[in-house]
Amino acid sequence: KPTGKPPPPSWETAIYGLLHPIQVAVIEAHIWIDQPLSPTILIDVFDQTLPLNIVAYHVRRLANRGVLYEVSTVPRRGALEHFYRLQGTAAPRDFQEPTG
Image 1 (cartoon, rainbow, N blue to C red):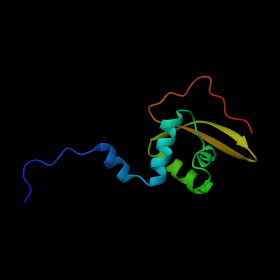
Image 2: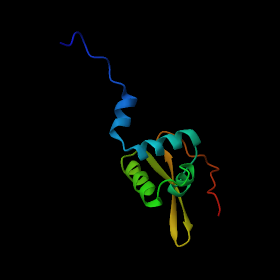
Image 3: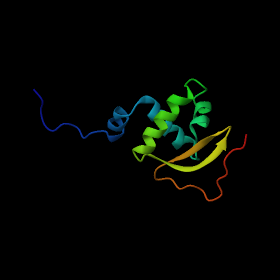
Image 4: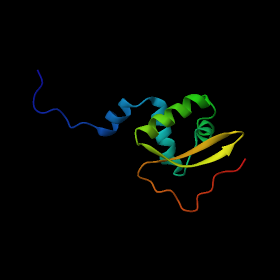
């Protein structure tokens, strides 16, 4: 039989419990690296253990939910590479996309 009030919720635990583990990894990468990242760059961060389409899907989901925002796009081999930042962080004025 429970006694007293339940402990307050741990918002960090609750939020991470609602997100897919790849989305948590994307958010954590943005926190640690603190610069605009593309799904292609994230694949390197994740030691190429995840396919590009899966990472890009989860990045788009986070962007659609307002967790990430798009900073820029760069033409790459006939496609566009999209760079994102974590919402609540400022995009530096002197940001330059990596070349390659």
